[in-house]
Image (cartoon, rainbow, N blue to C red; front, side, top):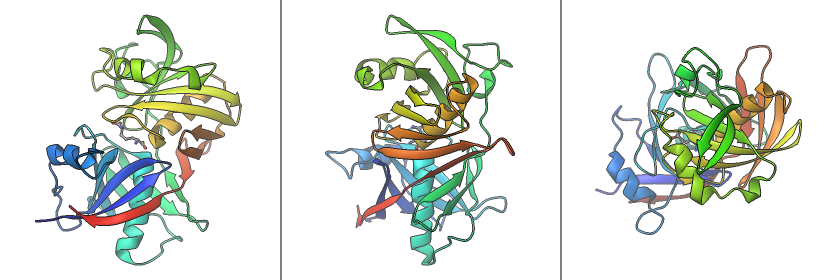
Amino acid sequence: MAIEFTKYHGLGNDFILIDNRSSLTPVLTPEKAVQWCDRHFGIGADGVIFALPGQNGTDYTMRIFNSDGSEPEMCGNGIRCLAVFLTDLEGISRTKDKYHIHTLAGVIAPQLTDDGQVKVDMGEPRLLAEEIPTTLSPSEFQVINQPLEVAGKTWDVTCVSMGNPHCITFVEDVAAINLESIGSQFENHPVFPKKTNTEFIEIVNRNYLKMRVWERGAGITLACGTGACASLVAGVLNDKCDRTATIELPGGPLEIEWSELDNRIYMTGPAERVFTGKY
Ligand SMILES: N[C@H](CCC[C@H](N)C(=O)O)C(=O)O
């Protein structure tokens, strides 16, 4: 039986969204999600996102399968797309209040803004080695500016979790990084027991960063919301940027703030509907 879906993207990081409000079990298996994400034999996307019933008092639950079928804890661009999708499903425009979404990274709260973007309370960054997780440093230590050998080169990396793992390194020129040849070596490095997303950051100034990303379970994407949040945190920890900055991704800009008041990360950016179909 054909299943209805709607395609969305956040700065070109694109997702198939499915109304799964009738059951806590995703209607697709990870294997099916891989087929659906195939850009030649399927619909084509970086992942599949399910809008499931809420749990423990939340409005809804979000689950996501990456295009390789793995299930990450969270997705920043994806939850902005989910917020717009839910507004479409509910038929109301909830710009005045936040959605509270249960995820494997905790409760995440997106809110539609009056200018049609989505502002997301992404929660607090996790900084201890055991929280990333990584064995790069002792488990109760933070991982800031540590050497990591990848592809015959020593990189200085900082690790941050937004519920999902991120390895961030600062470079002179992001355009010069050969993501195709080194991305998966970072992703699958033995110091990351759950693999990792990897962000390459060029500091333009203390309020403007350029980023390219190799995502765990998806490879090169045009944007990564959790990665942009993690990169802002890494920039602050290394005193390379302020706590509010624009992060320019190949797909466009995200505004990120690491609040001094509540230690939470706030991400603001777009989410665009593309088309609805059945498959
Ligand atoms: N590939 C990521 C999940 C999607 C994150 C990214 N698309 C975002 O916008 O945060 C992971 O396995 O942790």
